[in-house]
Length: 432
Image (cartoon, rainbow, N blue to C red):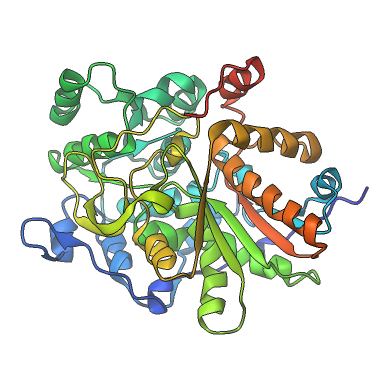
């Protein structure tokens, strides 16, 4: 059977990131003390200046430094696949494509922004970076990137994932970073949460608070965030920009784009260049954000200003949120256990430019097995949410006879998630 892999050569890798803030008005972050728009200088104690500049920029295209493109070239451009075997297994007339971001050294899309954030910090003389991580994908990507640029890295990993995915922390250690389960005894806020909730599974909101506190108290340290913020979405647009060049080599164009959504960075990366074309009136592609029912931010949250962390140390962000104190169940898609969502993604959903749906854990793993047994790739539990939605949309095409083109972002592999799959096959995996 034909198995289509659409490749680009290194010279076709994008030389610029696309900034949707040139085409979409997003409410600014607010200073919680004044409820006024945040002064960029107020962010300088924890972020590199160039990243702060990118966060607020309305320039449509921002050049990618050659030093970053050189590291990108280790795995970029990533391949786009036509999933013929999945189509046959489903018996659907739909054409299914997926972008394989699992081919990066860290196994996910996260290095697209981790390399950029480490680079800009290196250029400004940062000696140490702190961060949080949910499933460990972001923590391993930042560890890899800090290693490239000679920066010390400290990772606060959500406790449930720290113990569910031991080899993620091993990978973080392999590239030279220090990783601890959050809440940890290493910060004042971590100690407070451990005392208040001794059996907590942790959350990204707690881990963010610890990492921000650490950065704020150490002059040689900056903070890096792997999702949510505008500049992380900006860096991820290499995914969608490459995909557009790859689709140009086929006779197809996506009718539907699907991505899993926690903070929203991989979804933004895959879809924003297409949403640019929708806004310009050139296309009418549906874009669907997929989240876990256990943490249904976009489908059940409120669209309002809220803190990005539990300790309320961050600026207020206008986003869909379940509340900064929400601690979701310890589902295995640890990267999707965030109470909020990117202000960009939130604005797109609020304005009707993007849809959102949610699934329970077991049905997501059902879809993951279908994909693995047809396409041969073991997807991360996060990416499996996009697969579940893709299968549902493909089956709708089977019912109607429509030959739609569906594209989803395979944001990462599940090689370090085998404990989750073991629970699924033994029948011990619950929906929450």
